Amino acid sequence: MSNQILVLDTKKTQLTPCLPSVADRLLTAGKAAVFLRYPFTIILKKEVIATPEPMEIKIDPGSKTTGIALLQGNKVIFGTELTHRGQAIKNSLESRRALRRGRRNRHTRYRPARFLNRAKPKGWLAPSLQHRVLTTLTWVKKFIRLAPVTSIAQELVRFDLQQIENPEISGVEYQQGELQGYEVREYLLEKWDRKCSYCGAENTPLQIEHIHPKSKGGSNRISNLCLACEPCNTKKGTQDIKVFLAKKPEILKRVLAQAKRPLKDATAVNSTRWDLLKALKTTGLPVTTSSGSRTKFNRTRLGLAKSHWIDAACVGEVDTLELLTNKPLLIKATGSGTRQMCRTNKFGFPSRYVPRFKFVKGFQTGDIVKAIVNTGKKVGEYIGRVAVRTSGSFNISASELVQGISYRYCQVIHKKDGYSYGFQDHGE
Image 1 (cartoon, rainbow, N blue to C red):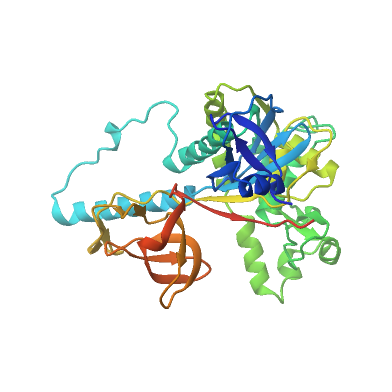
Image 2 (spheres, rainbow, N blue to C red):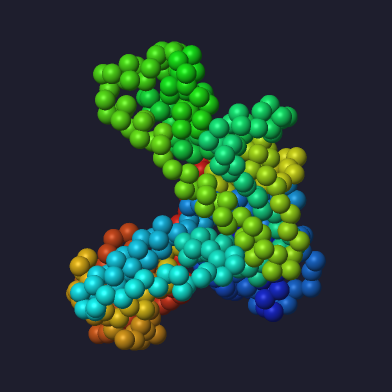
């Protein structure tokens, strides 16, 4: 089951999405044309006077991946997972800083530090964090332009870092009720990749395990907790982990190292959650919020698989859900290139130069094109991303790299927009 097709009329008014089979008939009959390839949208060749059924966007923000779902009532008609590039931004800034510092040290006299002159404005976010807010807002606005969206729901997830470090800090009154402990369990599942820490078993019930047994003075701090399947948990019992894994030094080293993994992802979500809420309110639509515990509770109660877009569909008050798709659109932020005209090697010395003009014969590197070659050695039809050359002989990255395709055979089907796209089949 694929995502439903978004529909616009000739005046770009949002209409109720349709099934892929209906869109195919409209395109074949010439009553509609392709408006956008990703997400796939058709535009009718006439004006339609209708009152479409209102839709809701639900968002499950994440540090690395954000889930987005479009719902009509309790029907999930479109799902997507947006992968951020926050770490890539951080790495690029660190690399630039190192290169600039190296050049200053080589070619200039000593200058006093100026960091005290550079006060950050109130509410400032690091570029890697601001990117998460802006890319999510970009796609929310795009869906609002393409579908009859009337409301937004956001999971205002909050990882209580102090509670994660010591779940007993607030006593038994903290987070009581049927949702008690869901934040800690969810964090452990993410931290240990939903696998048994000792044998790597997947798709099996996992139990919270104390690395250093409580009977020997171990605490409930998150750094002392891991996940284990029932056989491993029973076999370990109250043994010290160094005794239990004495014959498996590699696993012992990995478990001890992973137990001390920092809370970077949880901190990133905490830092951006309110900024994202403020950004969503700028759309002018009503925005509701819900806790991460409620999302986890809804998904568990409905027996749904763990996935970012399914988590998004479970945000807020949910009685039942009907999944009309199992192939979410996978969106990955790749960036829009760089303004750097001179590429450098790892030491900061010039290695190559790039053309001043980005467009060649109306094409730009990164455009998705369709090329139909009728003559020569490369006869065939190719669809993929193009890499332009000033000579007009392009390379197309389809299932494999095809070189030397003339621009005359190419037709743009999706302009470069800083994202790559794909689909994931979750099965029936």
